[in-house]
Image (cartoon, rainbow, N blue to C red; front, side, top):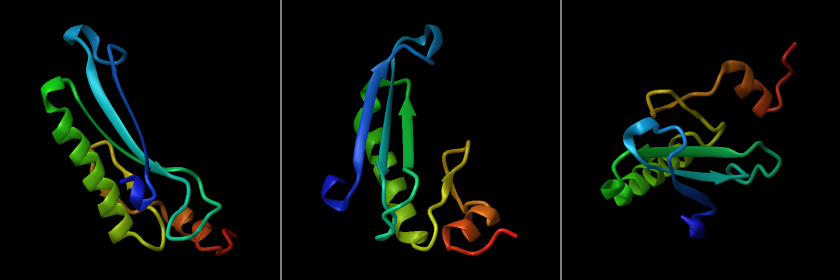
Length: 102
């Protein structure tokens, strides 16, 4: 992923996992989108409460980030609460593409 321009951050922590024990989270992020340098950080993530599933969770987040890169070249998508990609708001798409919001 680093060779493709993505940074990653991951952690094993008890925070947010309640009494179930520690969980694992990973984020893939980048600060440019298809050579548009001045943009907000774009970030895609996955998590699991099962520490035996860390490799699958990393792969899931990487696949999501790469799918976003391939399928949304003109404006980065958002990751919904269900973990799936969806187009960004119409307002953000106009802003992203330099169109007036008025």
